[in-house]
Every structure is written in structure tokens, then in C-alpha cells.
Length: 289
Image (cartoon, rainbow, N blue to C red; front, side, top):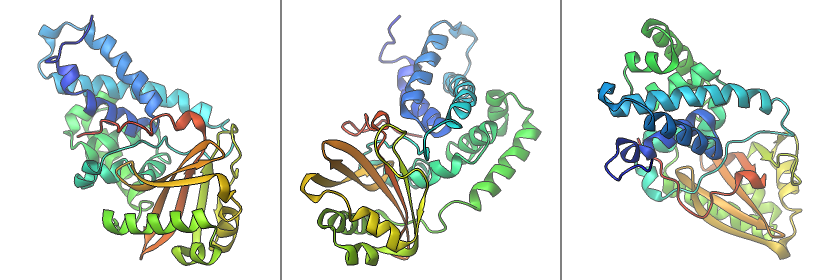
């Protein structure tokens, strides 16, 4: 059966993808979950569904949790660092501050440190503001337990999230300065734009060359970045995950780079080179609350 334009599933598809993506950190897996949820919705007795949006969010959450538990085991065997899959977005996403922060690479990386249920509860409560009763139905826990989980998850995230939310204009200015220095290989400028204790985290997935462990310190990071082949390096400022970021092309191989800032300087660099995670950089993702 094909969904009609007025089908609630079509109406809420962007929301369902966003929920799944924030729980999983993977657009490919989020798409699979949304498709699985459609099959369940297609076979459901609609006369028994009083709130289609709540029903669909509950279904997507359950499917996401099932998949996340499987993925968690796979990620233990992942080669090198695992980073979330970057998504091309429009600048409109940044206008919803809560949504933009929740899908940022920095926040998605923090969410990776939560357990599956904690992550789902945090996303549903803090990002989508769902009532505890609805969340309880989605994660299969009593509402009182969900409140406790939400409090623990909130404290966990608060201790690890970026302290200051940087505005898009400042973020874009630093991104452009960083990309220019990267393109020219200007070591001094790279050192200037980065904080002394900057950390570079790269994800090649064992498929393409990438450092397997985080690199700490401005000098080692700058020297590593300055070794890139300038003749075959192309850079462009783009919107990724709700904020200004960079798209790179090195020897015909794509990469995505997102930056975390504090006081106008880069404190963390997320570099994704795994080609399986770079298939959604040409068309903006439909992210919504």
C-alpha cells in the first residue's frame, strides 16, 4: 500500500526521521526504522488509534531502541573512532535553537555516552517535550521510572555538552577561517584559530585513512592537518547538522568537518571520512520537531 499525501505517516515523516536519527546517530539506520514503522502503521487497525502522532512516535522509538541495542554491539568492533553520520541541512534548522543543538555533532556525540533507554528518554523529553506518560509507553517503563531516567540523563548530558551555544554568524566566520587555513596549509593560521587544548576526532571506519585515536593539542593537530595534499584539496562552507561546517574533497574522496567552539576558537574538530556516512551531503535532510 502506498501512503496518500494526507496520511498521518506522510504528515509526520520528518518528525519520525528526526526522532530515529537522534536516537541512532545514523541516517541510514533512521531511514530503515522509518520504513519498518511504515509497514507496522500500514498493517495497524486505524480505528483503534486515537492519536496518530503519538502512535507513530511510539512505534519509531521502539524500533529505534531495538536497532540501537544491535548497533551498540557492532560499534564495539568498529575500527577507530565512531562518529555520527553528518547530514546536510538548511539554515532554517538553526532558527529552531533546541532542534539545532540536538542534532549538532557535539550533542550527538554526547548522546553516544548514554544507554539506549536513557538516550530515547532524553530525546523524547528534552527535544520533543513529550509527556512522561507517552514516553513511558514508548520505552516500556512506568512513568515514575521514566522521570528518574530523564533526570539522570539530563544531568549526564549537562556535564558533557558544550557550555556555550555559539551563534551561526560566529560559527560560520570561524569555519571559513579554518577552511582557508586548511586549504593553504598555513600552520600559523591553523594554530591561531584553534584553542591550545583542541581535540581532533576522525572517523574513517577502517575504509579510508584516518587517525584511530583522538589527537590532543593545537600543535599536533595543526601539523597533521597541514600535511594534506593542497593540490587535490577542495573546501566549501556548508550547513551540516544545523550549523555552519565544512565539506572537503581530498584526492576525489569526500569528508565532512564540524567544529566545536569556545571564545572564538576551535576546541574540538569532528572529521568524518567514512564514505558510508557521506552519502547525504547533496540534499538537505528533513529535520523537524
